[in-house]
Image 1 (cartoon, each protein chain N blue to C red):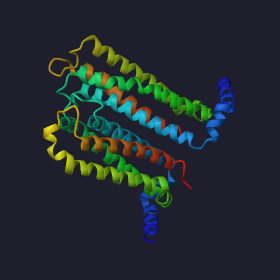
Image 2: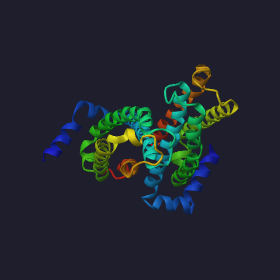
Image 3: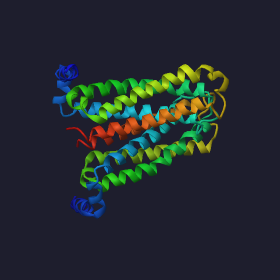
Image 4: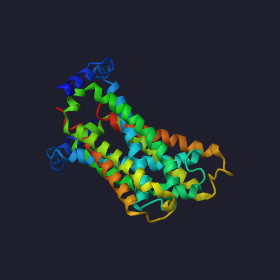
Length: 164
Length: 163
């Protein structure tokens, strides 16, 4: 099966072998991964809570997004890079782990949610950006995002308990 | 340390510890809540720190940024305390006897102290930290160690599993 061949190839790359064979490289990368995820989830929840209408209500949404989201994206790039390295080091096991695959699916859904928000509800954002109570579509996007990112953390934590 | 060994052995044998060890779902659930609370605390502290340095929300008064985020540094710490306690009770020796756990607690004391100092400085003079008038040096002096301490706490937290 092509998927298993890809996993095997990844696992046998020299960088994957180096991570797998060292006692300290994996935990170091993992620590950076956790730090990056903490920053992603913490910063994005500030925006989500504003969209839902819970906090930062005195800040216009577009100003808040301009301030916060660059940190979210920077941290996400670090999380994806470190996550990719951790995955390679044991690709076959992660590639067949329910919680790993579920976490990837949740990330895709979070991406869709964000894309839908930007294409549909954020188009007329200038009209409601400063409102305390936002349109239902914006509230829904915030709630879905928050739920998905909490689930990403939960699934990520469960990977460590379900490796065969 | 003899007494620490005895304490760990005693705690490990309590029915509460046994219950946590038996129910497989408890530890990952508690760890998930712990990480989510860490995200709230650390990012809230970071927002204040970055505002002190003058990188984040520089056009807003410091008192507004601290009113928004400082309670979110303090209150979720109760969640961290509770979930942390459950993890310790579930596996006492792994936590209490780990030098990395002890380091994490020392870093936490430092982070709490520096957050307290920040709060005191902000309350004492509400215009303190306004970018036009205030001195960047003192603000950075309390902000940068705070960022370093919280980062160290997250790293130490992950390393408890390995040391």
